Image 1 (cartoon, helix red, strand yellow):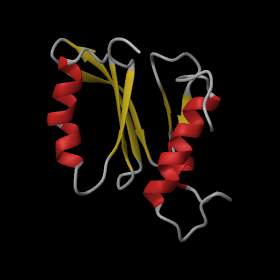
Image 2: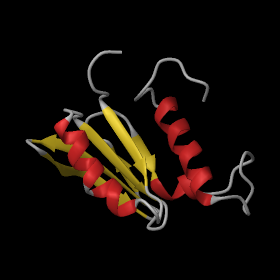
Image 3: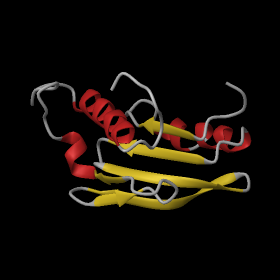
Amino acid sequence: MEGPPTLVVEILSPSTRDRDQTLKARRYAELGIPHYCIVDPDAVRIAFYSAEGPSYVVAADAEGDTTVEAPDWLGLTIAVGELWKPSPLFPPDSNPRARSSRNIAKELCQNGALCQECPH
């Protein structure tokens, strides 16, 4: 692979949330990564950002039981609240961050937004 990725998705955790939203976001912009997505399990929120110069601007965001459409990926609409609902893979008492990480990756792949071949 040559060059930066097209998209970086950060799933916030209490111990790294400030760093993910500031230091890492600046570094991604400096590296020329055009799209940045932050998933916040505590707020049940997803925000898509687009690079604008040396920083990012909000392109779309949603929280709770709403949907968000990723503006740069035609047809990629994510039902935000659905990502945190229990599934057969992750029972209700399992870690919500683990559930959301797997569900987000699966949702993005099923929509064909990120990859052509993957294990999801």
